Amino acid sequence: MNKFDFSLTTRGGQKVEGIRILGNDLQDAERKLRQMYLNCEITKCETISLDKEVSQSADIEGILTLISKRS
Image (cartoon, rainbow, N blue to C red; front, side):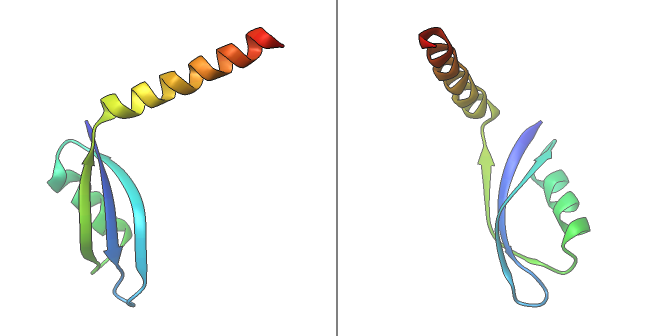
């Protein structure tokens, strides 16, 4: 599965940014997004690599391990 980061304008004209949705592909993620935001206009879509997110969380775990060792 991939993760997609969307920005959109709702049918009422409100801007919404940073909506992250998991999907098998872009079409699947868009379908899920449009179920939540009917008649929205997608202004931006980026694919987020899950490998990057895993490595970031591993870095946080490493920091927490260092902190706990000092205590």
